[in-house]
Length: 157
Image (cartoon, rainbow, N blue to C red; front, side, top):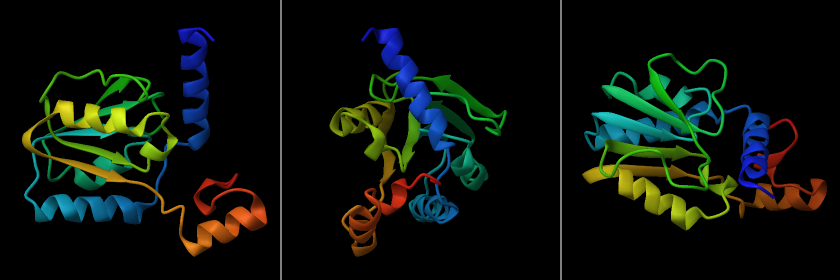
């Protein structure tokens, strides 16, 4: 496959996700960051429709959203950058105060490289927040046996 074909596959896969995660996950990430006094510039890697920014915007001064596609509904005040999250993030070193990837890492081919990128773009003393579904829970395993897919990866999701 050419690079352009790979990028097309990535954009198609991202578009099918609808750019959504559960609001409870966003609220939990926000509570953790608030407890730590996080503020400044937020990177939302895999920003989707901007739901994390909607929860965190009172706490942060700016948001850079990076995703394979720009989803409808992404707030206009998010500085959007289209990028394949399996490649280098299109940001300078130490350019954000907090980097967040909510329900994203499980979709990537090289999660370790992605985490290194999040750390690279986060200023010293900043925060990196990652969440991922628990695919080893009893519910997910039962769903895998019964339906052939983990609970968080059903057709409706």
